[in-house]
Image (cartoon, rainbow, N blue to C red):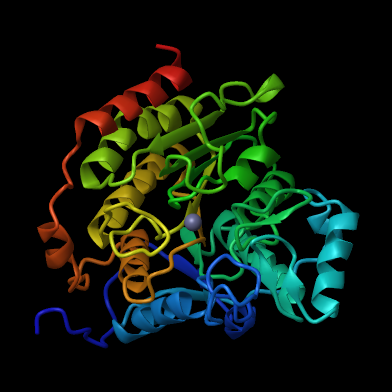
Length: 378
Ligand code: ZN
């Protein structure tokens, strides 16, 4: 049993903050099956965005002995006034009203329960605490294992299971509180990070990068032509990849576009809205990544962070709907962030490797070159 977790503390080379809360798992997405209004078309059941994927990741971090090596950070709810830096008060009042009525769809595909607004405030508050810990030097980097997710949240619209713009609010907070200018985001959730893009679309201080499955969610969003506007022209980068993309495509996209864009921008901190729905076992994406690919991607970002911003990196947990596999992908990211050498062998990796189709294909290479040309103007 080479991959059985050994519950013994590990040796780490970086101090990684670990933000989570039992209350994050109490965000109630109700008994919707999939994307549909409750009706007789679909049997009621668990919503895709239920606590299990994240609770099991928290469990695996504990079971492998990694948890005692992390630096626990207890979140506190963000003040509502701070949320208005992104979301108008009328939108916050709307969210509160939906919750107070017992719950329902707060926007587009975003079911909430009675306490979801308060839990969303705690999620943003966790990101702000992570920012404080990183910028005061209490930790080198930080992982926020929160619900609800945030990267689809628009200023005035709840979308795609997201209520509040967790990472974007963290970026605003870091800029205002610690007086830094340039922040980059690298969003590898399989869906387009449309909320983060919209919030910073005309802002030259934030480079928003999204790698995602082409035209998955939201529909008609995340295309290569969306490169920013006004003062923000040229600091929004979309890399839409064909369904079926795996190791080869993601590594090519990093080498050809993501890493050169980061090097040119010279960020003073990096945020990674990290979704694990680009894994080969995810029910909501058709990509092929394994935990080793997530480990490779976070390592690339860590190296950029070391070169440009003293390693300052904040990872916010986004999508990922395979309760079986999200924990292994997330564990690989946290292991790499903390510099653990004694990593857990992913028991699913051998199976995913056996699927084949991981090498860069011609259509994937073409899509990457098109995104590169659209962004760099080559
Ligand atoms: Zn997603």
